[in-house]
Length: 221
Image 1: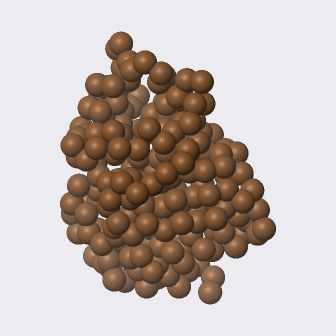
Image 2 (image 1 turned 45 degrees about the vertical axis):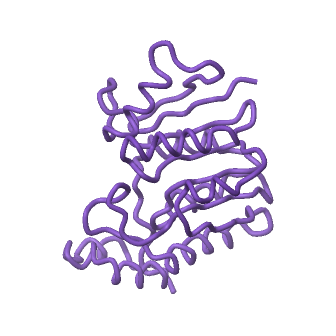
């Protein structure tokens, strides 16, 4: 089923556009694209960091916009782990917003079909990120932290997941440039990035790119 034209979608009243159940139905049927939470500059920074990676984790999927984009740039046959408890999450989404596992899976599946035989293998983890980390293993080339945006939650994701990143691998934080020149973001992720990586920084890690609300780190070889 083809997506509705943008001109028609723009006529939808905000109350209907933000209704969780209506959005899930429209997204699942392919009538609307996933709602993007990233600017063009954010997306470019993320995809540049992810390009060619063979194993990646995204914490915080929502409607699947960034996951679908990742499907287009990871290495052929890469492994992509998508982590989200779905539903309404007060520390991850604006009030009243929520995401449907069914609808998001369908949106990501459409992106996988578009990539054909080179599409990554997607592993879904419908759970909190800390619960997935406790049973996770192996190395990553990309870790995208975009889930719990409270300072405590973002710090926990960093502490529990950065150990899996291989030398030369990247960690991408979203909403992490509040107070920086030309930057935007939220207090929680911005505080975590400032504490660990600005000023003296953390040994073994360096900021290699920044754009709008996004910070990209690289683990030293």
